[in-house]
Amino acid sequence: MVVSKVDQEKSKKHRRGHWQEALDSLPGPFFVIEQVGLNPAEFQGHAGKCVMPVEFKGKKYFCLRREYPGEVLVDQLGDISGRYFAPPYFASAPAFLKEHSMGKSGAANTLGLDVGDMGHLIKSGEIGHFFLDGKLRLWRSDIYQLKSNGTRQRSRSKKGGKARIPEAATPPGITTGPVVRPVEDNRTNPSVKNELASYVPAGLPGGQAKVLSKEGERPRAHKKPPRRKETPPPEQEQLVLDDFQIEADQALQEGLSVLVSAPTGNGKTLVAEMLAKNVMAKGLGMIYTSPLKALSNQKFRDFKELFGENSVGLVTGDISINQGAPMLIMTTEIFRNWCFCEPEQLDKISYVVFDEIHYLDDIERGATWEESILFAPSHIKFLGLSATVPNVDEMADWISSVRGGNVVVILEKRRRVPLAIRWVLPDGRITKAKEARKEVGNLVEHNKALRSSRYWMGE
Image (cartoon, rainbow, N blue to C red; front, top):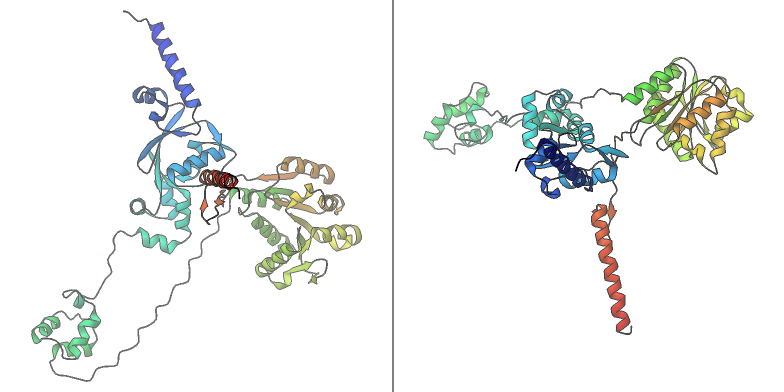
């Protein structure tokens, strides 16, 4: 039977359609070929455009290139790799893995080590690794954790370095102290004493050398207390700004209003600190507002420690400290009242920082932020900080329309401090959602059975 090229193309097209249906039915991006029942040889020859090989802990998988919901991606990745990440909104598995890893040479440059030292760290398990598309990848979290402690990093990168001991202690395999003391007390065999005397290094004190070469007794010398080793001060690492912090600082130096939206823990307050430093260097003033009195007190302590007691003041409903300072910390309600009743207090203020500016959308208190923005003197620019502003562009357009001038939006979506949802079970164990749901189901069935038994027993 002769099979034409047309029939062959139809057969290939049919198989590809079967592969696509099998891949579309997968609940997550990672899978093994046996899971979808495909021919390994044919699949690897034609599936390069839609999948990528990946290997975790010696087990080989494939990952689809298309995007998946973040929770589905990180849950499956945690199950097969033992690593847990904050879920993105949507992401493809290859792009997500590349974002949270780096190559061997890049890791060596980040840590300031040779490639050979990196191989030792990888082999010892200090840096977790996997293979993506046949290439070695190292987890960024492990690299940055090692980088945060340079001493620990260097000590762990050394390849089997041996401690140096005095040559006199080497032949018997003991330290110098146990060698000298038995000889001083004349408790050693003469033959052993003569053998030890031949190993006395030139570095030993003269008195001890005489003891080892003589058989007579002499008064024991007073042992000097060991000198306490001075611990070197911890190495100060140079602060490296993230891209969103650099962009925000540049826009603020140009005298523009800026809205920064970044996840919690990414360093939004550092932008305000850089702004305060620049403003006070020009001889101008700045106000930092917060929605809560407790948060205002905390910021007052932080900034006072950073800039000095004379440079920072606090104004709340019941406390006023150093009100003439160039940098004032206050609640947003106090700033709003100043805009209405004491606008002359704001003549030298060039910037106002609104921490948690998303309170503008609050039903009960949002009017305070709205009135502060509307009625602040026209020469004042704003820096808004928040982690939860879904419509930051819309907010920037509104501020620009009522205040005039451009409002720069700085948006950072990557979370530096990962968050993960975990459940606490009745016995105190902390577990993932899948195991928790199973445990809850078992408890429900147990309670049903308990109620049923009580009903039939007439209790």
